Amino acid sequence: MTTANESSDLCVPEATEPGKPWFVYLVRAANGSLYCGISDDPVRRFAKHQSGKGARFFLSSPAVALVYTEACRDKGEALRQERLIKKLRKSAKECLVASATAPDQSH
Image (tube, one colour):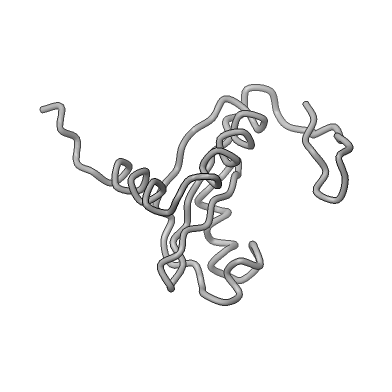
């Protein structure tokens, strides 16, 4: 498995356990903005964001809630889904959040 290196277009091997699920997630900041990321453990990653050891995104407005998670087959799929979500308008991201928190209507 390979991932794109942020500093270049080179691909570097990624050591991950086969079959281990990855997640794309959205975190709400105190100012209402949404941050999209990927992790193999979104709850642990959210705790890092809250402690200030995650993304620089939260330096201006702290992370307040993990509002959306989506399971993916592997890291590659999570990266592709993250890219798609990041291209969405905020209103579309809010729809994802609403769909994740909506009560089950199947009953």
